[in-house]
Length: 302
Image (cartoon, rainbow, N blue to C red; front, side, top):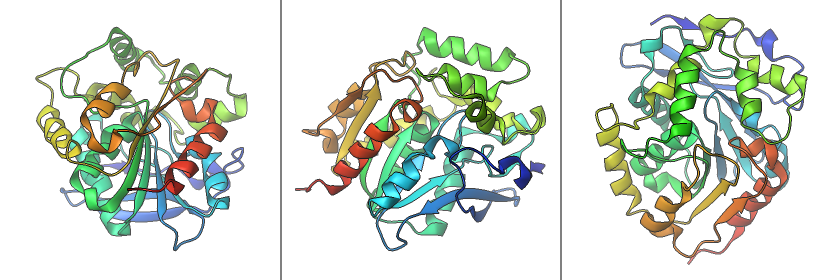
């Protein structure tokens, strides 16, 4: 496997993103070493809040979350998925699969030996993060689900099909433009450039480009069976689960309902809809989301 690594100079002087980088190296089944970058701020002995990004963003998406939650006494961890951010980037499109991503992040989670986790996940952060919850339920204390899902080969929306077609045809792949298109407010030119920073050229974007095709939205796609099994595990998960979807994301509209109906830990929780926020709700409502996360962590459990 050929692996690309974005030069550190690409991440210099990004607005609001001056966190000390941390790295963990895991090994793929083919023997290739892959370096995963993560932000790790706040008290080291505090229970971790794990913030998982999706496509085509990276941990820059959580730049407002990290200092706010750390200042409230939480340990805040925000990794970059393989292929994104400061993490290593396999060069070939067929280096990427849904199951490989789950395996890579499972190895990372076990290497850091995180427990008592509060997960906040959005987009592919949920597709992967919820698989981690299903595989390692004892490591998670609670889960917040926003603008994501765990698809099992059904509910193939027109909005998602349009996105998938666009992602495979557009050239070059406009990362910052795509993120801006999923935000109600307008990102600044510097913010859009920060979303482009991990990719010096198109050869670094294989993960970003292929991700939309890996979502198992048709019955004959890979990972349908694995996600069905994960849902069965989530249907036994009785720790607190909160849905936090936005009101202006056509791709995930209605996505909170399956979690509320099927996951025991979601029963009776103060589920919330984030108003005037797009797909990347972290960009539109960081202060509100940080307050929700902090309150959810501090809420008494029965």
